[in-house]
Length: 308
Image 1 (tube, rainbow, N blue to C red):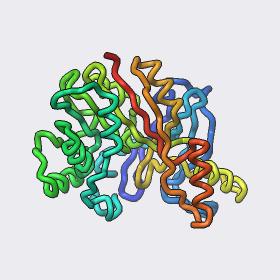
Image 2 (image 1 turned 120 degrees about the vertical axis):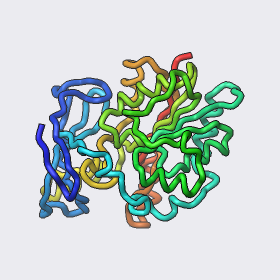
Image 3 (image 1 turned 180 degrees about the vertical axis):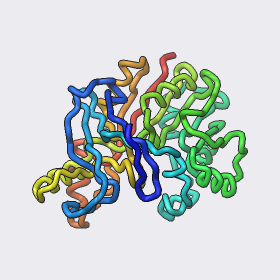
Image 4 (image 1 turned 90 degrees about the vertical axis):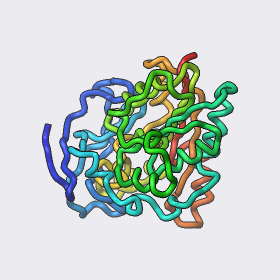
């Protein structure tokens, strides 16, 4: 294990011995390229900094860095002003926020009186607000004290139902929740497989979970990888393990199918979202159509169920 400090962030670097989601060993890894500790832009060839290798697992499609950078303190990444992390529009109270996911959860669950839900990595609490509006008794936790504090001030949540904490130290009784939401969470965690397994224990038998993560099949990332090769670099745009938004993993549908078989839950569906194309306006309709047709959008969402 090696240590280092980058732009005020202190890390421990460890070699990856096995894939987090399927436990395949190094013989199943392939090298995609390298990722710098800063934003790279279109022309990273002359940039200087510390780079980690980015690997893809041939068995399940998970993408991850090696060596693996772990912040010594989570606060190094997330104890920042919420305004510095999210765009302005995120702070508006949007009645449609999470509405599609709530409708899907209700459709997947049997008719339940006073259903309960847990929002993992609740941010400033917008998901809690939406779940309450959707008829759930909502609970959540957030590892960033600044994010949670803003949510408590802005929305007036009960502190006992909106806790400060992480997946690693959160404690709930077995079978407590009917629905668990992981919105943009697993890509930040050192152990996403462990987080899913822990959440399964918190679900009531027959309960469902929703996970949204960056897709390792995103067409734009694959195009940028080819462009970097043509310009004489081995960089990739996958992940951002040492700069905001600090993504440690990317996933594909196969990742969760393999994980579900290994850990005894049912994978119900997978949805692909195009997201932003980051392309000139004239190209956007074509790129969006291509990503929809090939299921290679920016985001992947999966739904699973704990066996009844």
